[in-house]
Image (tube, rainbow, N blue to C red; front, side, top):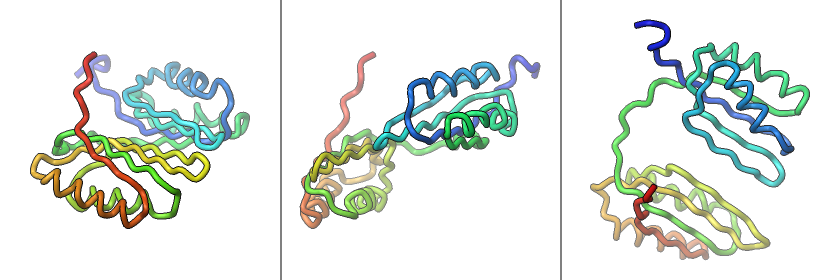
Length: 178
């Protein structure tokens, strides 16, 4: 296999810190200069703090990528982590569902509803929560195995939601048309 046809290793890179304009441009600029190709990314602001995770195919070793990103930790006050990730193993897939939970805020909401999903083998593929005053909102994409009784799962989620004093819904995700 020639160098140009080799597949670059995948790196998981996390960037955390106080938000400011330009963090994404700075990080991705360094990665592009190293020959990195972004495969999956997510970024969000959490109460004024920036949080980004990237999966990058990069021909440079993790230590070199870490060294190139290191100036951002001193100058910009960011925390950066770089590690190689193994090739993705085949994961059984199911049907995509959208889980929403809302109600009065209290500890344990995320733990309780995600435990119900985990107990039947459903995989949370994306999760976001927001607190506005005393109203708590959880939105999660859930991959539910085709062998799971979705009505029974929904009933269990509703039961746990009632115990927590919140409301929940689980509905199939419509296929996106691109």
